[in-house]
Image 1 (cartoon, rainbow, N blue to C red):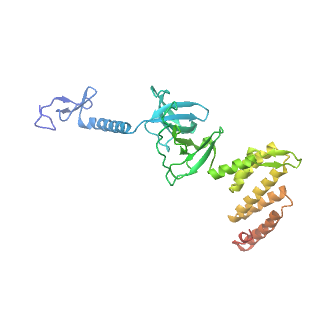
Image 2: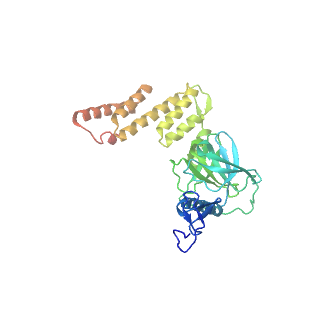
Image 3: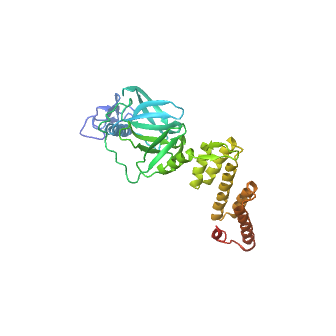
Amino acid sequence: MKCPNHSRNEVTGYCATCGAFGCPECLKAHEGKLLCPTHYRPIAIRLEEERRREDVRRRHARQRLVVRFADGRLLCGVAFALNVKDTGFHLDLCDKNDTTTGETVQIRFSELKAVFFVRSFDGKHDKTTPPPREFPPEGSELVVKFKDGELLRGYTPQRYDQDDPRFHLIPLDPKSNNLSVLIERRAIVGVYTPEEFQEIKNQERQVSKTPEGVTTTLSQEETMGDFYFETRNYAAAIEQYTLALRKFPQTPRLRKKIASSDYNVGVQFIKRRQYPQALEQMEKVMKADPRNSHAHKKIQQLRHIIKKMADAGPVEGELEESL
C-alpha cells in the first residue's frame, strides 16, 4: 500500500490520533505513538519552545539571592531569571554551602523587604581583589531607610524613578558581599540624597527649649516634619507634626509649625487658582492662629477675588502677584 502523501513510499503505520496512514516521512514518534503531521505539529512547537528556554537557562549564570521578607524571614537560593516588573519569581533553594536542596518556591514581591544579589551565601569571598565598580552617569547616590530601621547607601544603576514599585541599589563598598540589592518600595520609610539625609541627622541632633524651660531633643516625627517642610511637601509635614503633637500636646512650637504648613498649603491652592480651597485653608490657619496677619490678608484678597469671579468671570493673576 502506497503512502497517500509520498507515492514512492510504502505505508508503515497510522496516526494514533486520527488513524491516517503514512510512511516514515509522514509519521513522527512521540512517547511510543506515531502521529501524523497535523497532530504532531503542536507537540513539535512545544518541544522547540522548551529547547529554547533551556538554551536561555544555560546561557545565563545562576544568580545567588538572599531573599529577605518583610516579616523577618530569610531564604537563600538561585534564580535563572528575575523580572522586576513581574509579580514575583521562582527561587531554587540552597543551603549556605551553595548546594541546591531540590526545592523550588514561588516568591512574591509584595511580601518582601529586599532581594540581595550576593557573591556567596556565607559571606566568604575574596576581598583582596574586588572587581572595579563602575557607576553609570545617569545613576543616583541614595540613602534608603527601611521600616525596620536598617539603612542602605549606594548608587542606582540607572535614573531613579520614585514611582517604580522596586529598584536596584549597588552598595558603595566594592568589598561588600552584596553585588546589588533589589529594594521593595513598600518596605521603606524614605529615599534620600546624601545631602537630605545629612540634614535629617543634623536636625535630630538639634536641641530646642520648651516654654517650661525643659531642654528636649526633637522627636523623630518632628524631625521628619521639618524635613518635609523644607522640601515643600507640606501635606506630609502636617501629618508628621500632628503625630508629634499627639506625643507632646503641650508644645506650642508644633502648633505653629502646623499652622505654617497649613498656610503654605493654602498658597499652593492659590498658585493653582483653586481659590475656594485656598480660602478654606486660610480660614483654618486663622482658627488655629488668630494673630496670623498673613493669613488674614490672604483671606481678604481671596474673598475679593471669589466675589469678582462670581460677578464678572475669572480673574487671572491678581493673587499670584501679591504672593
